[in-house]
Amino acid sequence: ALIMKPQVYFVLGGPGAGKGTQCAKIVEKYGYTHLSAGDLLRAERGRPGSEFGELIENYIRDGKIVPVEITISLLQRAMEETMKSNEENNKFLIDGFPRNEDNLQGWNRTMDGKADVKSVLFFDCCNEVCIDRCLERGKSSGRSDDNRESLLKRIQTYVQSTKPIIELYEKQGKVHTIDASKTVDDVFAHVQKIFDKEG
Ligand code: UP5
Ligand code: MG
Image (tube, rainbow, N blue to C red; front, side, top):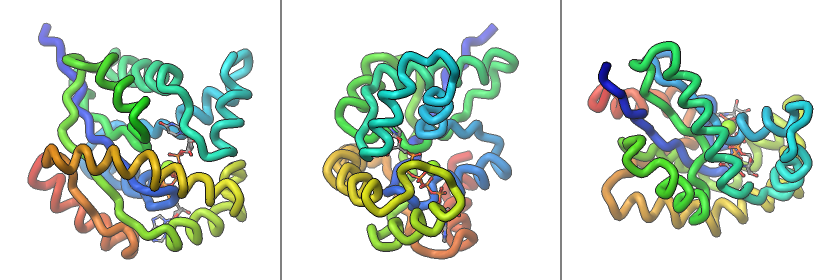
């Protein structure tokens, strides 16, 4: 049988830019598998017996980026699980990763030749809107990082560490920049233009 390689879109943008919201809509319409690195880390944090639970919680609350070995192993396992039942389930949205140089190097080290990065969806949204959305969500999300103190740190990490990664991919001509400050439907209209072309 053919060994299919995972076809990956990285989905990046500030905290609360709408990555998860748009990924859900892409899954529904285009049949991708959505892997949120943040969700995978939160699940690992809550897994009884996890040796990383406390470390992950401390990093998330401080808006810092978890060492890549942990994140990559979770992503890799999730991709393998998805493709185990059907190899043709090889289209992935990797949401919220890679966020820094350590993430990028870890990905390249581990996944080189094993997965194709098709392109990067960059949900571009100003910091003020990002903060407002997360604070609003924080009223009911239960996320330990949806508070003003954590948010300032998340924004700082985003600007200092993640933006340069997006710029790096931009230089390779791999980035689709999407204005994420519009309504959910308007943002998705732009997303659809991209996926209708690229599949
Ligand atoms: N909303 C969404 N779109 C809207 C729109 N167009 N108009 C109005 N409202 C909109 O949306 C956020 C909120 O805004 C929701 O209430 C939504 O209804 C509304 P969401 O789709 O959840 O945005 P998203 O970009 O997914 O926001 P999220 O908070 O998940 O982004 P982060 O990047 O901050 O969080 P993530 O879960 O990816 O990471 C959390 C932490 O995990 C990181 O800070 C880091 O500590 C750690 N992490 C790592 O260490 N490594 C990783 O690789 C990944 C994460
Ligand atoms: Mg999210």
